[in-house]
Structure formats: C-alpha cells, structure tokens
Image 1 (tube, one colour):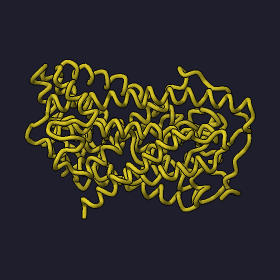
Image 2: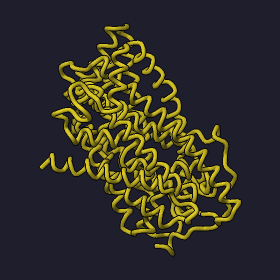
Image 3: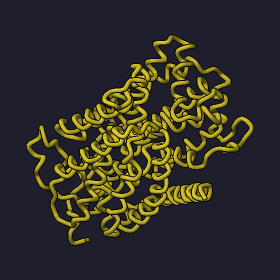
Image 4: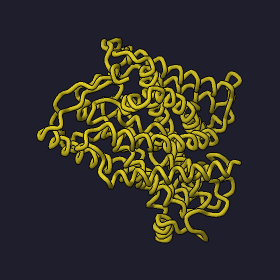
Length: 471
C-alpha cells in the first residue's frame, strides 16, 4: 500500500488567523444537531430528568479530542485520515464502508424531520398514491437533497453555507424559548445534572436503557464515522497541507468534475520554519473547534435538554418515539402562543432534514474514499464516484419510505448504538496511527494520548454493558 499511496513533500503554508478558519466545525456541529442534540438527549431528559446529562458533557468532550486528532492528520498530510488508515491495513477501507452504511444508511434522521413537518402542515393522516403524508414528505426531501448537493459548484461550500445559516437562525430561536420558560429551579437541576445528580439517583436512573444512553453519548456531537469526515472537510477547505489537495466539484455545474486526482497528500519537512507554522495552525484550529463544536454544541444540547425537561418531563407518551417533541411543542404553545409551538416544530423538523443532508454528504465522502482506496490506483475520478454513491443512498432512502416505514426513533437508536461501537474501534486506530506514522515532533502530547486512551476504555465499557443488556 505504501507504493500506491505515496506522500509528497512540500512546505507548510502560513497559518490563517482564527477569523478565517471558522467553517468546518459548523458542518460537524450540524451533523450532531439532528441526532443527539435534537432527539436522543432531549428524549432522555423528558423521560428521566436532567441527572443523565453528565454523559452529554463527557460525550462531546471526548469527541472534541477525537476530532482534533483527525484534524491533526489532515493538517499535516493534506489528506483524509482514511488514507492513513489504508496505509496501516489494506482491508480497513472495507470496514469503514460497511460500518458507515450500517450506522447511517437507514434514513432515520430524515424520517424524523419529515414526521415533524407533516405534523406542522397537517399531513400525518393524509394518504397520497397509497403512501402516508410523512413518507411522501420524506421522498420529496431526499430528492431535494440530491438536487442541492448535485448543483452546488463546490460541494464543501454548499454544505458549509447551509449549516451556517441553519445554526445561526435555529439555535438562537430555541435558546430564547428555553430561557423564557425555564425558572431558577430548572437551572439548578441542570447544574446538578452536569455532575450526575438526578432526582433520586446518581449518574444513571433505574430502568434506563443502556443502549439508548450509549447511543446518546455517541451522538453528543457528530458520532460514529462522521467524526472522521472532519479530515475531509479540513482538506477540502485547504487548511494546512490541504492547500495542495483537489476538491470534489459538481458533475452538473463544474467543468472539473471528471478530472482525476490523487487521494494521497503531501507532508512537510520537519524543519524549524515548518514546525513553527504548524504550532500556529494547531493553536488556531483548536480554538476554532472548541468555540464552534464544543462550546456552541454543548450550549445547544444543554438548552434543548433543558427545554425538554421544562416542557415535557413526566408527560404521558414521551417514551413513544419522537412524541416527546410534539409534547414539547404543545407545552410551548400553551405557555406562549400557539404559533410559537408550531414554529418550534418547524425549526426542529428543518434541523433534522438539514442534518440528513449533511449526513448523506459525509457518508458519501467516506464511502467514496474507501471504495477508491480498495482499488489502489494512483488517481481517481472522485466526483463521479461520489455522486454515484450519493444517489444510491438517496434511492435507498426513498425505497425505505416507499415501503411505508414510519418509526424513525428506532432507526436513530439502532444507528447510534452501531456508531458507538465504530467509535470504540477507530479511537484505538487513531491512537496507533498518530503515534506511529507521524514525525515525533508532530505526535499527540501525553495528555491527549491519555484522554484518547480514557475515551477508548470508556466507550469499550459501555459497549460491553450494552452487549450484556441484550443477552
């Protein structure tokens, strides 16, 4: 594999200032908005209270350090981390294709968004051509996602722009509602929950489904293999050595879409000048990710969980799928204005659908790169393969909707559990990759290695508990 995936040698460009680095973390944050932030953690909070949200803080913190090790590889080598994994073991691309499809192939997030929008527009009881209104909305949305991703001239810019606007509009709206409805006692319960103190329990309540809790930890952020896609976004944004890499462009609006390019990147000589530049890149990239992904992501998750607690905790029907979101909307409408409750449902539905778009983009990137890595050629028509896989996934989702499947929550939980197991696997792989294949001056510090090792053990522990609970 080394001969077919050679690393070139070029100098590291000057680091960009922090204000010009904002971008990739919006995508990885957007990937989490439709799973952990909007669904799983609020679901747990509406059913068990806020004493479980310590797991949310732990989950997003672990994912911050995972993501930074993924970004480290991309900054230094100007390629995705999947290329690095392929240098380690030539069969790993097959594992990442399989685990990505198993974790995200079923359109649970999109179906959840379609369910909420159907509720908003009164289509849940409608039947069109033998299909329920929710399923028809899902089909229309998947076709629209394919069109958006296919028409945008440079794929990365399309996805980043959509996520920025979604987060800048949706998150403040939800925060305003939450702070209006919550009182001092609710914020006290939130503070206690961060340290694991619940109502009559510490850390985990009696009767909680371990698989759901594990899935929520995995989705406290992007989750699963989607974290690894951060290396693709760093490369495509042109950060660090990614400045020398090619980008995926539209088959329809770009003349460069059929151009062949290499998946392997370039690294830099470890001289004094390049090491100083890398240090500056590393500081700025960490700041960008801690502000956008960790801080904004944590605030969003805490806010949504608090809102679920304030409006839906203890209500009947919360345990049934995503009914708790409808309960939230009804409570918001009763305590403010009915139109605000409807607006909340609409915003959450759009968040879920935008997340489905980003998931389809990220999974298509992941499976494209790993499919091509299995072929072991030097150059590839990446855009052609990417759009082929994207539309295969879209058609698969439409097929699921056509068969009238209407239980999105079960799909989301199943995907989350699978993704927790994949995170356990690749955390160990990342530790080995960055400590074996990078120059000594560029390897993770002892503190970061310690945190990733703890993450590996933590995920392994809860994965084991999940398996035991299913036996």
